[in-house]
Length: 365
Ligand SMILES: Nc1ncnc2c1ncn2[C@@H]1O[C@H](COP(=O)(O)OP(=O)(O)O)[C@@H](O)[C@H]1O
Ligand SMILES: [Mg+2]
Image (cartoon, rainbow, N blue to C red; front, side, top):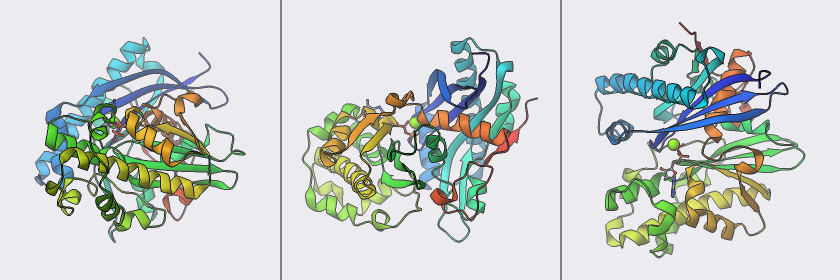
């Protein structure tokens, strides 16, 4: 244990559900071990503020600044509770790798940008630990998508002689394809985000536990075809997307009030499953490790298995990575790479012109 270098990774994804915090020890071979994990649920009021800013319902700059502060305080809470739970002193942590809360991610416009909030200066001050943050913007500045960043970490988890796909189903779903030839990866499209948005609107629930509500509905084939005709699904990688695109506004164009709400939920689940499966089938890989909150949606996982009967689809637990903390662990690793002055941006994944050292160091007080 004393041999290990300790880092904390913090992730709060597009779902706006929770902050995932992971205490990660890297052994002398550089292999990560999840020592302690902790989640802090985002208060509903914070979640609404995030969604309102993402969707443009709220546009005041003060609201962005206030959220920047409030997220930093929630990240501080997550770090402190994680350390208490682990019984670890903050002095033994080299750095906190903090993804931040994405408000906007527009890598494809001429003046490309991506914005994550959660003031890292404040987080470093309040935790007394160095923070590494702002991971995505250097890659965007280098002409890349700034996403996904997790494939570089996943590359360290597997033996590259066997082709492997990592599938993470968060708000948005993304895949990493790791083969002897190299690493690629991209966002396939919506993960849980449309499912969450629809059930929130119709049943006032944060998500469809186990996919039970979707299971009560019927898949509407013409609707699914219309949705799959969105150009994002046929666009070639590198590509990335966000909840600022796949959201209730995106759904409005399909005039969904004509249908039973549970049939729409079932169709949205099909959209997620089919858009993921068709991309994975194209890779030809049969070994798939699943992570992200979508892992808990029993119907979604069953549909993925049905659509890819040849594949061996397993939880990332099989590699020692708790599926709920894959991304948090990746940000611990990204912080370590930054402190070590090593590249972690993969141009072959993001489309950047060159590899970059990702992240900015906010020293401890
Ligand atoms: N028991 C469950 N049943 C169905 N869906 C679930 C369950 N638990 C979590 N989820 C889904 O996972 C989402 C959170 O996934 P997560 O990987 O944290 O995404 P993000 O990285 O976008 O925050 C929730 O919003 C919900 O849609
Ligand atoms: Mg989350």
